[in-house]
Amino acid sequence: MEGRTDMGNAHLTRRTLLGGATAVALGATTGTSRAAAAEVPPHRTEVPPLWHEFTRAPFTHPQIPYVGRAGCRSGARRFPRRRVIADVRDFGATPDGATDSAPAINRAIAAAGRAGGGTVTIPPGTFRIDDVIRVGHSNVVLRGAGSTRTKLHATHSLTDLIGPYGSRYGGDKSAWSWAGGLLWLAPEARWNSLVAAIRAKTWPFEGWTGNRRDEWRPLATLAPARQGDRTVTVPPTSPLPATLRPGALVLLRLADDAGHTLLEHMCGGGPGPEAYTWDDKTKLTSYVPYEWPVRITRINGREITLERPLPLDLRPEWTPQLTTHTPELTGSGVEGLTLEAVETPQQPHLLDKGHNGVVLQCAYDCWVDDVTVRHVDNGFGLVAASACTLRHTRVAGRGAHHPYFCREGSHDNLIEDFTIEARTTPAPSNTQLHGINVEGLSSRNVWSRGDMRMGTFDSHRGLPFANVRTDITVHNDGRHGGDASAGPLFGARFTHWNVRVTNGRAGMIRLDGLAPYSATVGLNEVTDFDQIDVPDLPGDLHSRLELYGTTDAVRPRNLYDAQRALSR
Image 1: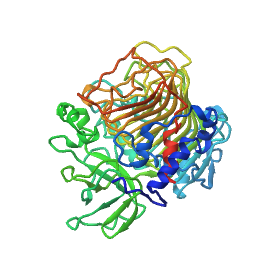
Image 2 (image 1 turned 90 degrees about the vertical axis):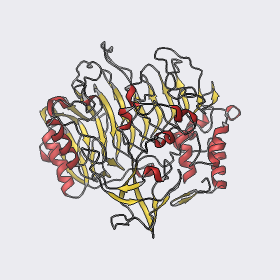
Image 3 (image 1 turned 180 degrees about the vertical axis):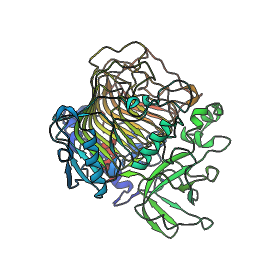
Image 4 (image 1 turned 60 degrees about the vertical axis):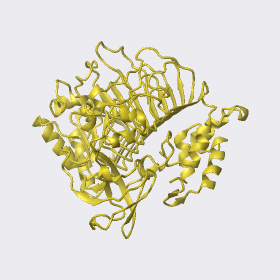
């Protein structure tokens, strides 16, 4: 399948891939990568064998995933600029830090939604908000004057505003520990149904198909295809409805079989996954079917071309289908502001009140740019969100449970140029610090150019696979989470590339002894201490460790930037 290199408007051939590989390896990339390359003398740069292998099979490489189209609008450097519809002051917002401006801000956002989209501006100053700020219509942008100039000061938690949110898995846990934000981007109808279910204590499913897993209907059955293909075929035995058209967002759905061969495939296959006990991993199996949102770019007869290459094989035993989903939020963003929660002590683990930051849910091609959150329980969240970009984001203040969380049904997202500051107050006892989390079958997400002054490369189990962390400095003092019933910490094709660990701790960062069919490239020397992890799968993991003890001299320096350069 490595011959299938058509990437839409940019036609990739093996020759252009190899030519691009040479250029990137020499540091001839754009933006910050070019500047970083100049810091390292040319004679010190090293190109790992894995990079050369990847360029020969970019969409099917066994250890490195293809993430070159991750992010909003396939990783576009510029976000859409929408015409200004309203200034929040025209709806009654007051930057005095004392008047509740939440109703006015939400009225301005609603007006932009009724107008079919546009930008709502928030001028410099401090605006008190006593309610959730909701972006619920597509093509609406909430824009402050900059994260150092516009502040939203949030006085209440989600528990105060919506009510206690229990866990659908039982117990006394608060789901505000991993869900919801005081600035919440989600389709209005989806947000309303979630809030109604929470208040009725029915604990909704948070994914792409509504409050229950079964709120979907099939559109078309698909013929077998291979990971990396962009064209799928609807066989003559399946209908081809008119709703399948270029530009439409569809949900690719893969079920599992009794032998759990889909889960084994997500782990790279072979004796290790086959010997693993899957049947008692009830939380993991609750995440199945795997649901991957993707836009259609072209239809030719019964052949459908997708915006991104397939993350997995399509096999008949997994009943591959295109299905309906909850209407998505698309083309919306938040820019240029700080969201500061009232400073309260961090709660015991999993009992968060919901002083949460920014969350994108059931969102596709949306973004957050130049946004800081401070004194939050949980910082930036992706919940059933895909193809979104978080750029120039920062978590600051008294310390957070999850600075960043990427939960089930979240794919192809890009978090870049991000910062997790050191906490300003000591952590209370019985609290927990994670870091950049990914879980629940989420795939092909990227964390790039990060400054993590605390936390770790977290997984909450649930078999996330094909994710990348690259060009990151981390003081590795966090701990991973995840219930044992959620299964393995990692699936296949996890890659950590050019990572600098300032305190020398290996946990969750050196992958060769933990993740199947994965890669660690360009890592300084580290050792195991504190939480020491053991592999979930038995036998040879078929993972690679290259340029160990080397950082920054590895070329390409940034795996995501290099893959984007290849896809142009």
